[in-house]
Image (cartoon, rainbow, N blue to C red; front, side, top):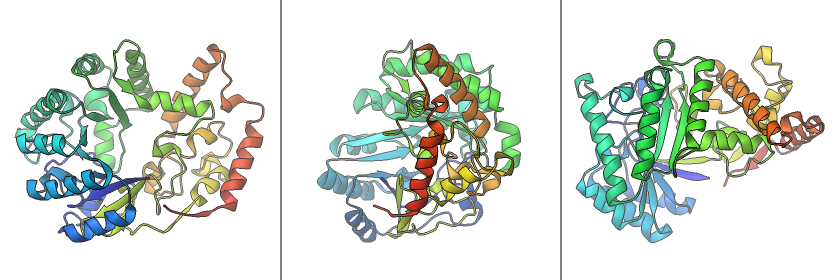
Length: 377
């Protein structure tokens, strides 16, 4: 389980149109006052390394950042921060180096390909993107290469944009970037989805293009396709949270700590704008129900990829209702089918077509049903 510390809640210097935290902002749950004593007490109780998160965590005063990073270094030998990269200064670089802070940067591409990540003033967006790009290069030179998160949408991953994206990835590889996590656009606003969302076919084509590119890169890797292949071979260890039967009220992969020390869940589950206190037990009710529910009614019944996908992330559920499977189901089914064929050509037998798949699936569901409520932590 990872710990996400959110001193300012979802407050941010940017106003990305597609941000999964927008339901919280629209509900008025924007910015909190942070209490260093309460946050550190909650971190002591969690007892694990943390990632400073937001919104945008670098909105904090440098002195407060130093206090938290120094705490993380003393307790765990270091910490992490996830940022949009725009606000990084000399002082931040110095803190990152002194307190062994791993940096993640969220950016969708170079120049115009990052325009969906709007600055609060549209006229400043390109300058903010240029600052983030320069800071990525600077981190590579002066600290360590950051990991990147890239969300795929029409503004950066439509067919016309892919050559530019591929060239950018090659340049990142040259800089020393080792990890890029690809996210499919999470659609919470139909108007934004109509403008920015790729079709299932376009998403599949883009993801497979990145996977093909990986073979020609020196060190940069896209974890998404590698994880899906592991899942098809029955190995769900060390795969990201979206594949691991998440309970939206007790997200095992993320234990949130808010600025007042309150416990919370992964922000991707707050679709009704409420930052619920994390439940003390993790349940498998969603996963079991999805297996029993026909696909025509929002479930996963009969899907041969169920053991790999498990309905995917509840934050992307159809109609924003976590009881349904992911609205991105067509994308994952297409990708699993393509990768299934690749594994077959390589002489492997994917779990999805294993003659014993049905028995293994039923046994897994029975185990989940018998342990519907597990203690978190």
